[in-house]
Length: 240
Figure 1: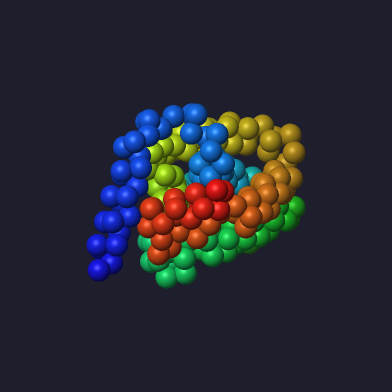
Figure 2 (figure 1 turned 90 degrees about the vertical axis):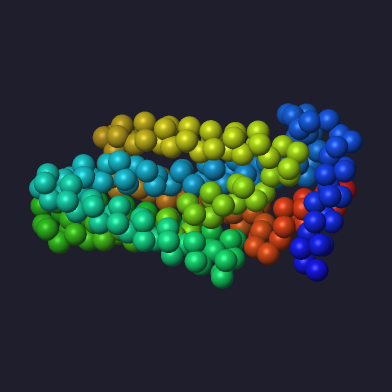
C-alpha cells in the first residue's frame, strides 16, 4: 500500500511536469523553488566554510607549529584520516535514526565548539609535546563531528531537497559551489594564519560556524521519512 501511494504521487507530479516546460533559471522566480534552491546552496557552502579541508590539507604544518617534529606530524595526521572514515560510517547509521536535521545541528554545534578550542590551543606555548597532542586530539574530535554529521548529511540532503524539475542542474550547481568554496577557503587559509595567527584564524572559522548553525536552524527542513514528492508538495503548499 505504501508503494502504491508513493507511485501515485510520482505519477501525479510526472503528469504536472509533463505539461510544463523544462526546468531553468526562470523557475527560481517561484518562491518555494527559490527557498529549496537557497537551502541546497547554503548547505554546500556551510559544509566547507568552517575549514574541514584545511584541517586535512594543512594538519601536518599546523602540528609542526605547535612543536611536533615533521615526521611525527605526518604520522599523527593519519589518525585524522582514520577517524574521518569511521565517523562517516557512524553518520550513515545515525542519520536514519536521529534524523537529518538534529544530526546536522548537533554536528555543527560540535564543530564550532572544537574550532573555539583550537583557537585557545594555539595560544598555548609551543614546544611542549602535550600541546601538540592536545591540538591533535581537538582536530580529531573536530573531524569526528564534521564527518559523522555535517558532511554526511549535506551530501545526502542535496539529493533530497530539489524538485525533480530542476534537480539535475540544481544538484550540479550545489556541488560546484561546494568545491569552489573549498578552493577559496584553502586558498586564503595560509595567508590568514600568517597574518592573524592560528588562534584568530580558527576563531574566524568558529564565527562562520555560528552563522552556519543559525542558517541551518532557520532554513533546513527535516527530510527523514518524507519522499521527494511529499517535500515538494509541502513546499508548494507553504508558498501558495
